[in-house]
Amino acid sequence: MNFLLKTEEAFMFGVGVFAFSLLGMSWWWFVGFILLPDVGMIGYLHNSKSGSWLYNLFHHKGIAIVIGLLGYLQSSNWLLFAGIILFTHASMDRMFGYGLKYESGFKFTHLGEIGVKA
Image (cartoon, rainbow, N blue to C red):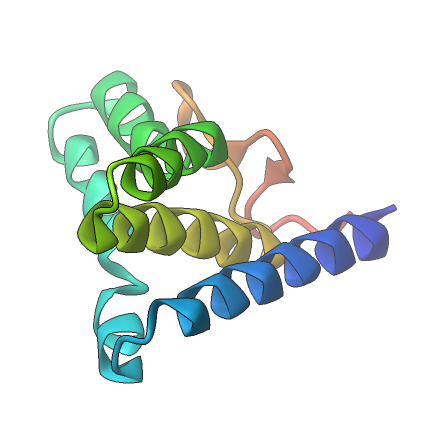
């Protein structure tokens, strides 16, 4: 099952990369911004509840899709770019086992505990 989930996320990562390629932007934008959603970890400086809430906000694929759709509907390449980056980053994280966070701590995710072999 773990292999199947990682394969699915790898496919979605590829969809994000393909979507970015359609924007016609320089690949430096992609490389420069693909890790930006991890700024959501800053909430952990306050506490686990704030950290998990902010992290999940930046890693929720539904939010990424809504932002991307708004960009498409408004003909805004910047909103579309933001949605694609958020979606692609979330897929990349989940490929490596980093899921949405629980309030109990950073290493507790919807995919299981980070660092524990399943």
